[in-house]
Image (tube, rainbow, N blue to C red; front, side, top):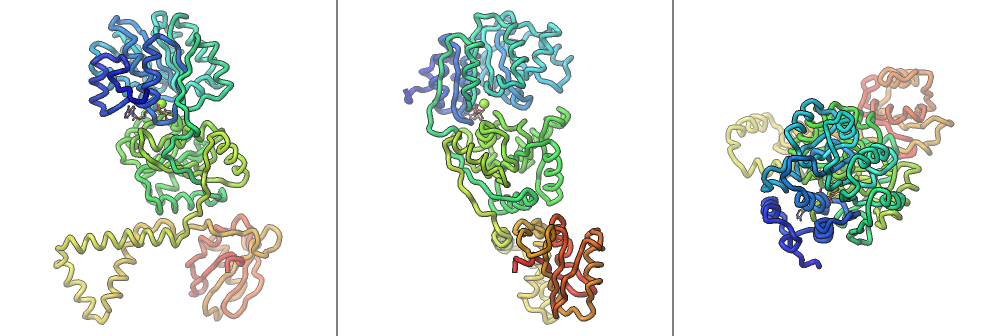
Length: 527
Ligand SMILES: Nc1ncnc2c1ncn2[C@@H]1O[C@H](COP(=O)(O)OP(=O)(O)OP(=O)(O)O)[C@@H](O)[C@H]1O
Ligand SMILES: [Mg+2]
């Protein structure tokens, strides 16, 4: 069975040529198994891991099942607009040599008039989202009476409660003798029971694996506190240096916030969610596909089906709501035989969900230590050393030598001069100075609700408790009465501040000055 080539699957030479153009050397297992069954005219439930070519597994036989008569013969439904666009693109590539076959993506947010114009010209296959397809049915601009084949990509998602009514409405408009194909990486039982209703003697084509997730994804988790997620994300990105990554949040608001924060830290990040205008969504996707955007922060709108070649890392910044979503989210990496990594942030009660996910996917998600500031620095230093070496190797430095000589004449050592230059260089892209995730304010010995902080002020000649409270209040905007100093010793003091402000106080006061004395501040239990 595994020896079957594209030529053995009963496909026309037009499709074989297209597949060759696309660089597919041999069919993937789901393609080997599903294509002949669909060509035989059977209904199919196709399940195979993410990134294993399910699109072509239904796309190729769909293209073979239709003829050039100018009527709508196939409908492919997808849960999101981005996926509809992508699947239509792949279908167009596959159908490149099938002359006179028109394929049209039909999705919300795009001018309906323009779609109607295109539909009027005669279209053989539409790839659409349920809402917009329904809209066209109601306007009589789509006629399903000649439909031969119907595909639900991401079938479980499409048949989930949210989409079911729309799907049923659409399916009822198609002839009963049509073929119905369902594809997804996940097929939860309740959905399988439902398929009876929509299919006739469906044949299940399941590429069996022990685990549900794609095999080449290394799966890790970090134990984090909610408030430290941003710093942990920055550190992990700095240390692992992903080529392109996808970061999943559970809400649109969180996506917007995280994008702002990442951008202000200097990362090439962008966001994608359902509240954005379609033109904006299209721009974001185009920039991400081109590799201009390195980090795409998204809601689950990007979880299913999206195929971007260079995503090597997926972050579950928020724990996915259900097990299936974990599978689809991390499946945005390690596609078509490549490898990838998935990092899941586990905060508090998420731990129980993590266990459920592992049970469902039959995989082990391995705990990883959060990179320390030291790790980040080491990586950055190494990168800097490499950069400097490369510049030295490149040569052409004569022009700058005279400046160095001038400095050396002034009795600075060459070591001092170099160190100063490196300091100037690395200040530019220092994104993690404020990282604070190591702080634990639970056992600082403060009064209830308060965190006890240790402050070292060096030579604190004329510093009084009032000075300290005043400085902290002034710098942080925290009401002075909330801050209680405990004791001033020779060179250090303890301060108590409300726990929820403690990390902010440390951030703001660190490397600050009180009466001309440098402040060093940390939780009392960190010493
Ligand atoms: N036979 C093949 N050989 C090489 N690459 C292939 C082959 N078939 C498909 N691909 C490529 O593999 C990638 C993943 O395919 P596709 O998007 O169809 O996966 P999928 O199984 O639908 O995944 P998901 O469950 O995430 O939707 C695409 O870039 C596709 O072009
Ligand atoms: Mg797919």
